[in-house]
Image (cartoon, rainbow, N blue to C red; front, side, top):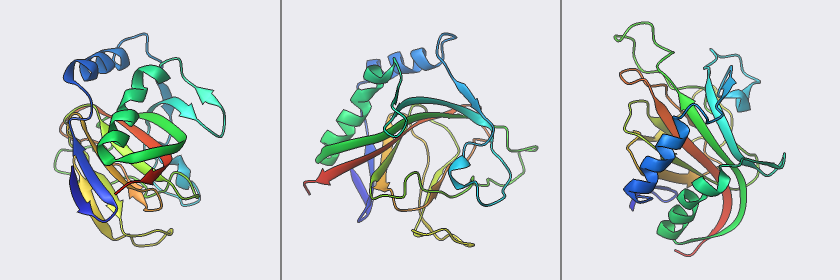
Amino acid sequence: MEKLTDDIIKFMGIIPEDQLNELWNTMTSVDFDWHYVPDVTWENSRKPAKPTPGFAHLLFNRDTGVASPYLEQFKPILDNLLFKADMKLEEVMRLRLGFLMNTRYNFPSQPYAHNEPHIDFEEPHYTACFYFNDCDGETVIFHNREESERYQVAEKHMPLKNSAVLFDGGRYHASTCPKMLDTRIVLTMNFKAERNV
């Protein structure tokens, strides 16, 4: 555990390697249901921005009652993260797998550009991003807690295999599409929990 700020914490080695490999094989098999999303940052659709297409698999959504048949297979990621963070779970709001590819850049020389800043839920909660593979394409976490014309970067987290970053879900944040590699798969977890530390 590495505390980056008071409410941004990085973790390594969330689940055993064999379990991680099994989940990777599940997600990358032809049997796994990925659903095309024309813009992965739809949460902030009020602002016009260049859309970022990608794929998603909703493991669980409190508000719609969606529960994927794969939910129990992926749930240990959240359980282990909560254990490492010394947190007691109160409510799971959403567990969502996101699959971004290197579709945003026409040329390797183009600078990285993060996707639309957003928050996942308006109510108080925590957000955690778990990374299944080493990849370029940072998760950018901002100081801002309200929609803004200009966002100030608090932290950037590069996807590292079997790592996670946990932060206050009231912070605006944004994904970044990979450029040098072709696959960025992340589990975004939104939940309410009590911190014991």
